[in-house]
Length: 444
View 1 (spheres, rainbow, N blue to C red):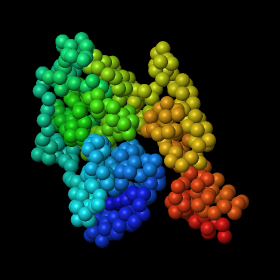
View 2 (view 1 turned 45 degrees about the vertical axis):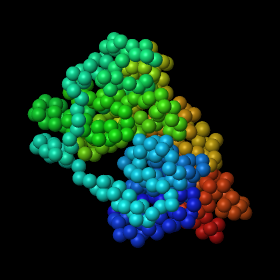
View 3 (view 1 turned 120 degrees about the horizontal axis):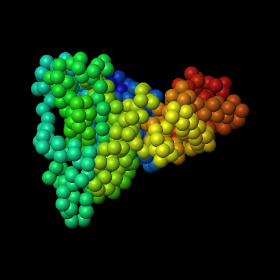
View 4 (view 1 turned 135 degrees about the horizontal axis):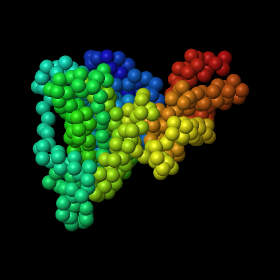
């Protein structure tokens, strides 16, 4: 049974879509409705949501940003976008972020249910188990691999940018377009794989290791290569490198932070490789630089990001820019790491305490103020305080609202407004979930 969240700033549309889903006969458990992106994110954080059906134009947070932030929280969440505008740029961005469909209003009921049905069926799609790979059953996946000579050239390119050929017009760093390297903007991700059970490669037959490598690279290609301009290949026995590139026009697209997109990709890759192959996976993500001459530097950044996994063994996706490398002449000590971590967490707490009443406050905003990525901040906050960052926001909001209910004559909508909620109904839901009683019951 799947749980579906319907999001639209028009309550009648939410009600209509929820009614269609209720009477559809599909295997649906809970149907939730939200009237703006911030309310929807609360559901994603606090409930088991499998599929989001969202309008694209909703005031402060549009459907694209909602889908992106939801996937940052739970990479496995699927999305269907609904729009009153047949805008190519929106559709392209939605598909690139993994939307399963892009539907135009006014909706046809049958078309809508077909889209939901197809999305749920794909979520149920059987994936080969590890033992099927080891028995040589590859019929589920067939991927197009790069030519071995091109792979070798790409590996040399990450190791030594003097591999670059003659320059081409508009770029003095060399023409690598025959290899699929065009850019001009690049980032490098590296996946360090670990065999199931943490076994050394020597514990497996060489053929079995190759099959697991093949399976992991296939998952990478299945997830990335339809929506992203990406080159992926093995760099050594248990490592995959991914070069992601953007044209000038793609890089100029507004609306979604590119580093957040890369982190979403990293978390999605880790989730699928671990889920379907039982393999450990650490992802290192570089910054974004312009020009293929920086590919070696970007590869080094991805390697360096992975090194931090030794300090954070329960974390799996590392972005180079999260660490203040320039502050240290050499690798920092454990004490220096703890000092840096405490500073980040303390800064986040101060910012939240000053701004939790703000409507539309997001983890992304808190992270930006502390110069780290949202996922890394969430991880550090949970590790240091024992509860996640959004739970801390809700705790502050709920304690203040309780005080206002008990000590003032403010009405429910006024209290909701004061503690950062646009919808009094959503405020009441959160309040009852937190305290076990509704605001009116507490007042009595």
